[in-house]
Image 1: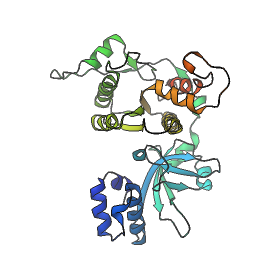
Image 2: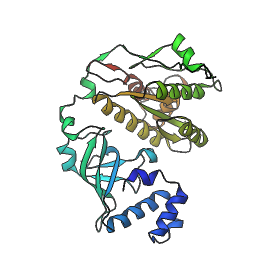
Image 3: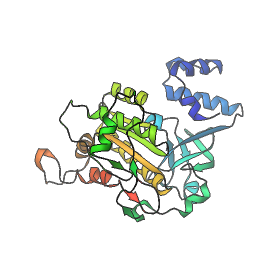
Length: 313
């Protein structure tokens, strides 16, 4: 049984499955708690369970595999990774790990990782030879991302016009500057659709910070990539945590020579979130922005680069 299959089920399907397994009070539980109950029941029936997620290593040395479906939020279906496994495979925050998991024993709250199968879609032995992202050589973009389609029936001309006026390359960093309500989000959607159609080798992540929940659903249904969101009803600390997990994941994939594209909506709101979170330095810039608050969004933006050794962000 794979954890991914469970996460793709609708709440109604999960409830039916839980009732088949005779889990008590399933109708009163949250979706993640129902999944936890189902997995625990399957583990008691000796069904092998496989899980995956993006590791977040905590200060105490151990880590958890967070799931993209929960937007990398801590939850009951996280998978515990022991310090010995982290040391053995030289894991770092942001690594995508897949493997076999076991049910929690008495007194434990989380599932635990038994065997590591894949790290960043690669064999675990290859991880030891990777070079840290900061030590890789950045270059100007050399390969173009073709956005325009050859389909004559296509009505959306945005990708073709972007190709003509501001062509994008692998490793490019770009900023859309426009007044409110002029269609920035729609432009990002059409760019995302064009990248997934023309460049299947690119790993696409759409990061939505401080957006409306219905916009998130719309983006998830229209984009064939990973959509991570922190909606406007979440605290600023949560916006910051999500964005840091996404950029760490992207860096780890680039270290494995993958091409990654992040579409962030919007860096303005991310900067506002950092402005709320960082301790005050006493220096205030125009618009009430703390002098230290812009350093992290700049790091996020500046992480985009084409890498000489292979891969790009």
